Amino acid sequence: MMSMEVLEKTMNGMTASENEHEVKRQPYWPNWAAGVGLGLILLAAFYIAGRGLGGSGALSRATGVVLHTVMTEHAESLDYFSRYYRGEYWMNDWLVFQMIGVFLGGLFGALTAGRFGKSVDKGESITNSQRFWYAFLGGGLMGWGARLARGCTSGQALSGGATLAAGSWAFMLALFLGGFATAYFIRGMWK
Amino acid sequence: MNAAPLAKMGLITMEVNLILAGLIGFGFGFMLERAGFGSAHRLVGQWYMRDWSVFKVMFTGVVTALFGVLILDGLGLMSFEALYLNKTYWGAQIIGGLVMGAGFVIGGYCPGTSFVALASGKLDALFYILGMSFGVLVFSEGWDYFETLQNLGSSGRLTLDEWLGLNPWLIAVVLLLVAVIGYRLTTALENKLKQ
Image 1 (cartoon, rainbow over the protein chains, first blue to last red):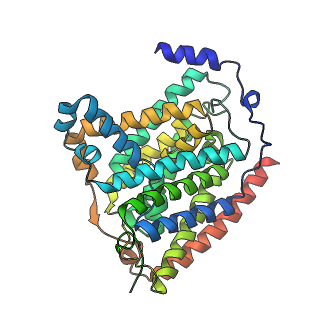
Image 2 (tube, each protein chain N blue to C red; image 1 turned 90 degrees about the vertical axis):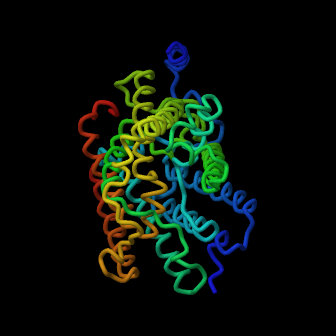
Image 3 (cartoon, rainbow over the protein chains, first blue to last red; image 1 turned 60 degrees about the horizontal axis):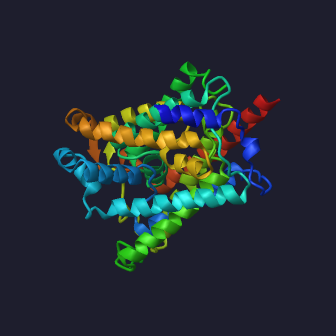
């Protein structure tokens, strides 16, 4: 992982404040305002497309397409993957367009609030490269779990929750339980 | 005659639907950013009970959209029945939820918020996204082992109102009360911790 060491050297000693954008930093919206806004966006998705939002579907499709391109035979030997590289599965495309929008919306939001800047979001007691490995591990658990549960915080908790899907409510409770239980064992990581 | 969902009623073409998907995503990403969810510190604060934003924003969003769906359905403007509904697989969703809760604390983000964090310049979010991709690969490679698990506790299309035998409006009102009381309690808890 040489690239990671190089990356860490360039990141060391760099703090968020040194990379602040010139726009004056705006406060976050109150929780209720962001929540109502999020709910209305979700409602628009229901009204227009007949389905909710998704956070992990687009990445699964991207992973499927990349694997199918670089290792065609192997990808085709994987039964589960075919849904992610086949073209006719239109829902995947909807999620890809939505996810491009999420990135651009996030970028616009960060720029206009003065929150855009190269940084590493971590606890003080760990190094940048440790943070990168933990992020990779956490992302891995999230990616694996999202395929098992057929959705993530967006597709299950938000979208499934708002349509009263029974299993999605069980998912939401389990997600919070899993989070609280794990937090105790890794409390040094975020200090 | 219900006019919505527009795509399912054939009122908009696939191309328009995809463009609107981009716009909806833009709004979603913007709201997540304004909620402060481009920050792992803020998100992780939930699991250490310092910051209840994840609970408050998520619950407010769910209740807002739920009332919107019920009102539009009641007025005959959109069919609730026609909306895509996640099927229930009790076992898969509970095990998946527990694992993802762990992944949330260790990685600092959930999938949607990691893209907002990356867009805000967080380098760790890039590694998180690569990790997610790796997790999806592992799931696909091990499909033979995971297929049984993914279908564990299958109950098909099941809503809370059907499961409990209650009116959906009643459930919505109860959830609204939980949201309002939960919001106040957790805000009081945050303020107490700050002192």
